[in-house]
Image: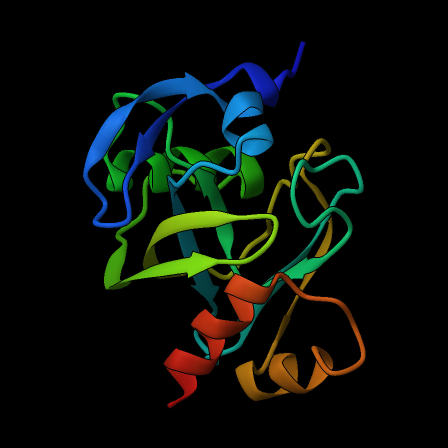
Length: 165
């Protein structure tokens, strides 16, 4: 059975130094800083794949997101997590990832050190039913404009704005 709340995740400080490991559920309850991966999936035309998160997600449920990815599990590197998340969420097998940048993000729900990657994949995708409701490609500027009328993950929008600069 799929129980993301019991995944063991690395807890870090504001300088991204590891402090220990806890179940994801406790990390969320205590709003602890953790690590996550963000993978921007582009097609050859330069469009970005956006996905709608399921309503059962523990943070930003039902929001649109510009990135695949998720929480880095204990013992994983960012790169290992990114590859695992691409396979789980979108059904993308081994594929080259391009490192873009690291980013710290904080709001009332989330405190996270994220590593942002990009890759090129045309699909088709196999969407993970527990995590992704639907998805589609669109031009990055169209996605940013879409965020004015639809609810997007706030950390993902910051990533999108940075790559459009």
